[in-house]
Length: 622
Image (cartoon, rainbow, N blue to C red):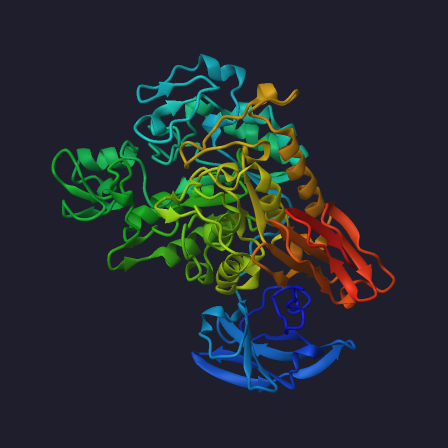
């Protein structure tokens, strides 16, 4: 019989354990830990770190039940980010409770809980799905057909397969545009989308447009400035938000600033870019033989120099700087996703990344105090998320890749951006350990708004990685795990793709009414139903996170808010099942199924979770 983890002491940063709101320096914040009597704990202490020095104070009992005691202690918010954890005394010696669990050993501070004085992302970011659109591949309006292709582009038919590598991957042009998106906003609304996020709309010399030739205008191929304004009006009229995508690390080699810098050594634009000795790593060479820093050595993407006042003026502080301009009329963007945020401001011994992030947050806050700032960071973003800049990160390491590793088909794609993706299934314990490691590295206020994804324009498609039979399992995790669920357009109808470029498929709108090989209505219904369950649950949107069972082939966890408790079961195969404590049910209540087929029932011994699998269950307990 499988055992459960609910007899272990528990704390997280949610409202059941920490008062809501952002503390200020000098505040005293009570933090609460729940200690089941079965844990054998005889005393609890709070350990904080103040000015680099640990402090230990006794926590005091403060309420509870016959099965569980609540202890409380106060954290003095003396530093902008204050780490804390709990020492648990009892038979067998002391243990530590931190964000990664309970440990009968010494642990580093990296896993400690954290209070932060930096305000969290706006609440709207997590209210519904974030829906990512790659504009060239989503929809064509009638006007798109008549626009001539530029000289760099190779026109493609809407049903063509995207190129996965080679020159065609960046030059294949399908002709999607912004008015085409407007025509399909009903699809987003029915899916439960709260925020539409578009990859770049600035002109460039590629279909992805991360090689901007200007930040002063929207690409005419997409319909130009007027079409962007129409899209913004249509999105906002439906109560949804609109987020843009900008590169702060680099421009395109065809950018007006870079071409001026090459043409005139005395031009002020020279100061915008990082110049380096030819032949070095990530250094490209101009036709005149000069070396310049570039993204991963791609000469088409010259790197911006954030040590230059001119860069700050052009990008952030000037009256026409794009960071603020597009948050104003007529677009009123609700925030930015920042491309290659992890490399912005970093070159050799220079590291201005945190300064840039804080300045970007301040700039968008001046235009709209409710605007959001999300970073792209493909690996460990924990240090960057503590500095008061980025509100959240695209959570590849803390969610995407752990989920893939648990559900992957053997032999599925094994790399994206040079990083491991899947290839071989790992046990549930590996997935959960990775999630807890990365969640523990940031304050709860960040975890609660992280952009959790099952794929993006830079990765293989979910369906290719895990296979069609495991999609529902992955989507259940996406819609029930703490954070902001992000869906890459096409995943909800079963799109496939072996890598980021190959995954940038078009939407088969012609098949939407009657189905077809590129429009899986059953998968779409899974997304819609689970999004609706999340939308109707305070626990799933904002509740805490407590792992109950972690087996090789099944995981069970609780999401808890002051008003609600929800149990989530995800099993990739048959397992032995478990009986959980009956105290999880509200007195006189019965488990209320919200989604899924795995049986969860109440009995004299407690709450019985069936070992059926593969399958899922989302059940309201209180």
